[in-house]
Image (spheres, rainbow, N blue to C red):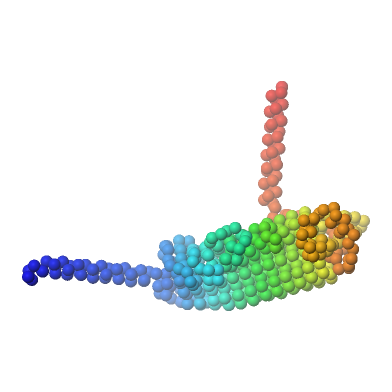
Length: 449
């Protein structure tokens, strides 16, 4: 009996042995993978050290609890599994460079990367997310430079899809940070700051989002050299103090009924200088804003150049309003100082030869008041009847926005800083057309002979 069972027992023993050996190999492989996981590599790196991450794909979540420098060299991808940030930083002085982060599963309120602490440097990261890009929470004195952040899913830049996304870079209670040369598209707000002070937003480009940059209850923010295109609003500034807005370009914010190049709401002591607002529904919109200086800006090819509502004690100097369908509208906005702006539709007489017209430029609130009371009257914009009625409307002229001495011509070339390339291309194209015309004329002349 035993002899008959011996072969079967031997086969069973061999199977058990092979199973045990396979399990040991699997265990060893799992142990090796665990040792080589990104989290394990980070944990084994000493504080203040640098980790060059081996090329490949890794899974989050990753948690960093000490100062460390992570170098990806553009060959490292970290993918989130949903439910939490892909990378969480809970320490000071963390550097991350050349890493690709993909977050396909998180809702808008969960970021791909969340930063706390101070002194961080994030450079040349690429983030694709269905949630938010980067959140700074009480994170100070950090540098975010040359980041590329894009929203996954619908990229139309309009409609309800905007509110199903998170913000590209989101700061709350975070001070003295720099966001430089980042490219952001397809998010809710490209760059969002709330209750944060002394931050600098420099040379970024945001497209196809709700607001390119959104400031809420901030102080001493500098927004300079940025570009916003095809957003609902280029720059939304609300409840802020001492904001500097310089050398930005916001254009083609026109697809939404509430689109503006620059929106100032309850803003005080801002300096708005040398910006270009082109092709928007409204170039500059001000409401409940006071004590701001708006100077040397170009506002061109918008439906409405300037719109002011219940705003006073603002100073508008040397701005150029060119080819806007409606140059300006104002309502309950007396007490503002307009001096030496250029309005290309004004009637000019310069008897003194000083480059300023002796005829004032007055901004009537008639059409804005009429359409606020009856929005359907917007259909009659520019009609002879509306123009005639507006010419009869002279009530409360002391409350009208009035430029007492408008410029005869712009103070400087209003398109010099943004159109040099286009002018060169246009010149070359025109020259080629001229040459082609000469050749055609010559050719037909020879045929006729």
